[in-house]
Image 1: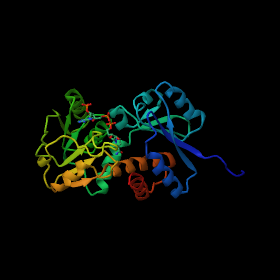
Image 2 (image 1 turned 90 degrees about the horizontal axis):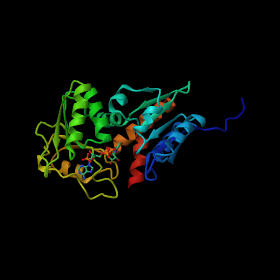
Image 3 (image 1 turned 135 degrees about the vertical axis):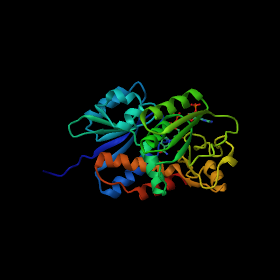
Length: 284
Ligand code: NDP
């Protein structure tokens, strides 16, 4: 066979997508791995999504990430779902298998749990409090339940969404689950081992903001983590650290879920430390 001028294609479909940093770390990883893969950040509107999914096959792509507003719409295009993605009801990573069939996974919650593990913290047997009940919270809560959390409490502005997520956890894992409506100066439950901000509060350019909770109810010894990755250290984490909590940045979660995607597509281990470094430089 002659020289191969064709690269393997991966990327992300979303709208808006211009500010999505995944491409920078993924391309850096492919290069370091010596993989002839590319990762393209693509604007795909809701209306054009069916054409884009047809293009995944037509262009012989290896896979694709989905971000807003496509994580649920993609379900009807998939041949198989991972057990967790099927419970979560949303997919952020599609793998095109050798036979052309499409497999859907949700790597957000798994990335979160891995980032925690890399910081020396396990989920099993822990009491977890999650602020927010959107897509990120859902992925984290479901995976935490599957990973053996003892109890998961969801606190959300819209109480009905917190209730729905608690029920989802209860119905699909052995974890106890509770839902609370977010009150002014919300207190963090005393038995919390791991507290997670799964709201977008604090995400750049809104970098001065922090979730409206009573920070004095964060105790030394709690593990406090954020899904917000830019900035890497949010005011939420700074306040928690000032109360003696151990903090874990959302940047680790982003890198860990990205590394999982790369492994799903290339079947090789991804250079996680390099990916974290590239992201940190990007957000500096
Ligand atoms: P969604 O829009 O699905 O959910 C947002 C959640 O935050 C809802 O529960 C919403 O409450 C709550 N919320 C929003 N604003 C406020 C506020 N001012 N005060 C209190 N609660 C608020 O978003 P996602 O779950 O998809 O994303 C959330 C964040 O997670 C984003 O910043 C995203 O970038 C980040 N993320 C990070 C990842 C990583 O790898 N680090 C991976 C995936 C996401 P309500 O229901 O009442 O509206």
